[in-house]
Image (tube, rainbow, N blue to C red; front, side, top):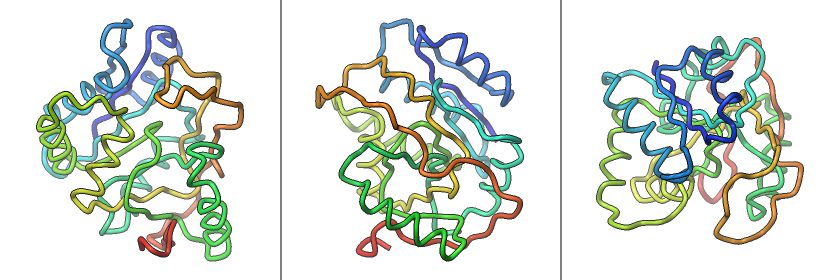
Length: 221
């Protein structure tokens, strides 16, 4: 497993704490020159170069909050990932994006009733903590290189790749990564202010993981 950290200069200390806790393999700190999208891609690209087929690659943002015994939980999550899942999201958040919140609320209730460890969907929604195996990450980077002058944020770029290539995304439940929610350092395309409350629907670990899953949207099982 290879782990990379995406960081902004204003969260440098915070990012290094995450780096040290997970003993990450790479950190990229944006000094205000490249922007979050390019910074994420730099980390994915470096992890692909550092890894071999069969390895899991994990990218964490600098405002990721890790659950207790994170590395053990992460190992269990990747071990018990359903076999049709190509991308693991370690975080499913409240409040934003707003268009998913009703479906998330219903899916979370269903996951609780069935003791499901996974909520699946046809795309990524967040980029706080993501994992892919080497081959899928390599394919994603190849896809990115074909997008000349594409300015979309990293979460939208990856979401487009998931839909285009029919990759299924698994959101581990509960989320083993939370969002610090201490304000945003970037200017979002919609121009809307980010309110407090952008945290995981449920955060923590499990004593025992399984491959039991439920869909976020029954129309996209």
